[in-house]
Length: 595
Image (tube, rainbow, N blue to C red; front, side, top):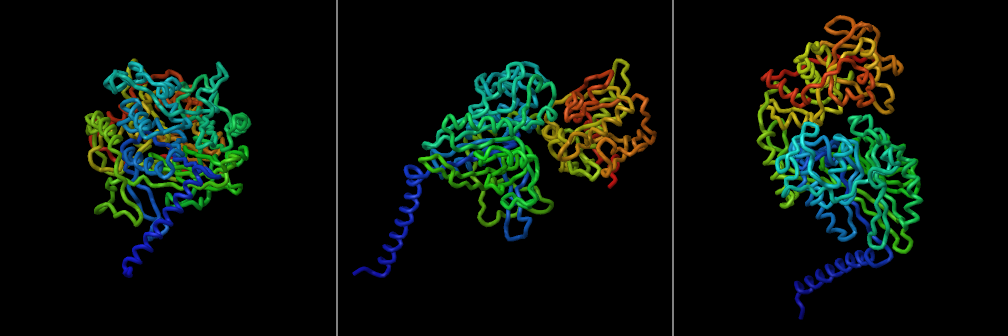
């Protein structure tokens, strides 16, 4: 006779068999039945952060609406999460990107011209990515090299280009990206053809899925103008809509847009899918594209969101620096190729690195979260480049007495921006050949990429992260009238926000947000060391080469006279720290805002 314990065991076994049968049946239905399940794993704005970036992700828990911070990111941890997610839908999962995977990178990648990041993304298994504006930071030839392979050219743009030292470190070769870059709206003027393929088609379990890749149209104003010379950046919506019929003719039934443009929400945690106050340029684009496009994977704004539009269209972004991975699941009818359902979630790339907190140790992980085990193959690659760059990266440069960050006042100032402007002013004061020293210096907020929060020794690696673009310091003569026009350009032609330049000590002005664009600088408020800026006087101005070429749409800089090019901006900042020894937090109040 069967005992009660044996009966209970048999019942449990039957239950497990039923559950396994149900799961197996669901998978079989996806694989050979009437439906196909396609999974996409998406990243954006990775910016070469192959090492953990040290920036936490806020996730929901019982502590309140703001949740709790979790240490996240790092290529080795990201690789493990990608592998785990692929295993949930083997053979039917693609890894995609939405631009800015390269550019504005930390020293561990930037020192080697971003070849380490390409190597890591190859190993992780990235399939396709759109091109972001930062992929153009070093010009068209460089992004083509990173796609197609080859060593960095000798002595180009301040980089040594020595094989085995800073380029082609793998047996004297660099194979380039195995993933495919797409840029449908970036056209070579001389040929009328796209710089990169406009789209990629993938057959997934009998379903043809088309990916259209785009770079934001405003890229020429965001990168060195000389780097995109000869290129035309066309309207995103018109480009997408013109391609949909072409893809349909090739049997594509599922359309996904990978676009380096994005939006914003006011969500307090990274996993909030309610999309409060969703806004930004991506909305106008997504709401006007062909109805066949039902999935828009976005980037650029360094925000994390999973948003569904009133028409059911899905818009996602995974934040920045590889701290999150977006999983998108598409259910497709096998016979017709019709998209039946879609869902997306942002997943945290939880690492085991301690968080920097004011007092005590890192808080424990909330329920439901555990640190990922780093992928040993990726970890070895990261460790190799970390060791190679450590001698330079760890070199102490100076000290700061308090945090220097990018947080902007209502007027548009930040302590770190003010410090860099002061460093530019000091750097342009060391002139030769009879050229007068600079009197005013400017830098752009987009050129400042990281904060300096530690009050201990500041290293060269930290300074490189703050200013990773290798721009040169440029000084020039501008009249007072040109200076005033330059200040007004901070608001002209900008649809979503102003772009207030950081200014050096001694230069002050007031602007009125209630006044129309073009008339915002209060008359008589612009002064240099307390003296009114005279329209007919000539002033020596210093800035970086990006702005000097008219970057960020500041065309007045291109009108400068007696132009002189100096040191790299990162070298200027390093010399400033060395000269000071201990750097004070600069006083603000240089820019005053009314209304």
